[in-house]
Length: 430
Ligand SMILES: [Zn+2]
Picture 1 (cartoon, rainbow, N blue to C red):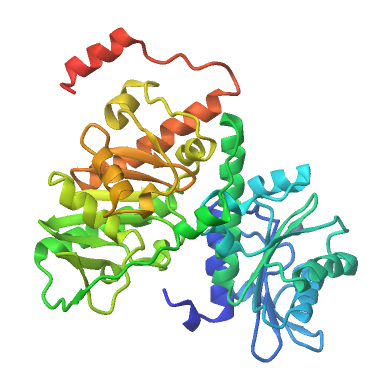
Picture 2 (cartoon, protein in one colour; picture 1 turned 135 degrees about the vertical axis):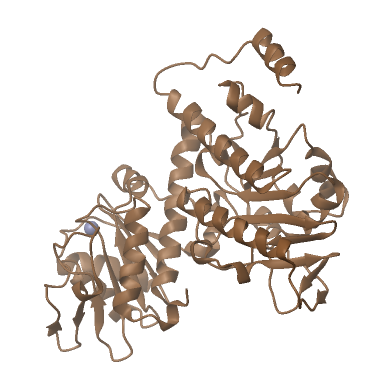
């Protein structure tokens, strides 16, 4: 979907639906706005159900203060106006009360975006606004002053979050990423102590890649079939909170040295079959930009001939183990042990270094007996002999991790015993 061709009314509806469906706002909470070229502001209405908003519900407020539309503009219009006045570069604003970020707002803490790569780049500087009455000019001034200081995201004390951007999608991606950091931190803290990445460690993730190119002219029917199945699972990964709009890599082997991979920087929710990038003999299809981890995929396929699909994801429950460094034990229920086996946590940075000694360490660890690894403060790498097997492993890993974290509220986990594990291994020929 090309957002730049959407009318502001439609853009607001598209994003509010994503926020609502992702559980980041209630029907009454939160508001969104877009600054138009003529200085007027398109904004969500006051007191209308966020679950059923239509483009015709969106209000346009002109620079003289008059408004057009069938409702009143949001009661938080004053702070939207104050922000646009304070920072002319801002073209869109999102305000919401996502539960994880509200946990930070009510304990009066700012989520740290340095717990995973890229989050601090996406979110920018996170500021903190002292409490003020909702809808008041005072609240507008407090928030606008913080944005004026160069912050891109502001946590509102005992209230919620405001993010801004050069487009509504940009502001949404900041909200989504900061909310992800908040959820990850909450979960990791239940398990142990959260590790924060240093500047030098964050630099590692920015390593670029160079690939030769080739002209792709005639896709086979097998390739078309794989493209279709990949898109179905990528969209499902987004809907199941296994991927975020910008994070999540999926690849599938077509044959030999030929595989398809997700593109870099494109919204996972709207990916289409033609957006997937073909890699052949270590080269990319001309005019395309594959995911940044493409060289790791090339190395893994080369090393493991039976491997046919790889997913690199950031689901908050399983990644909480990678951020706290607490070992994940899959001996919870038979399904988890059979599907996941032993999941090691690898030291941060191995996933960015391939082709050298450390990179060979990672490709050497992943095998049929160790199909999943957690990369410290970074991601989960899931492999399988088919698209569905890799996807299932990712889902089972996330579900199992969720149960382990939730169980902390009621008592100690009792893992399946050695006798039962031996019995499972014999019965399933592991
Ligand atoms: Zn609010």
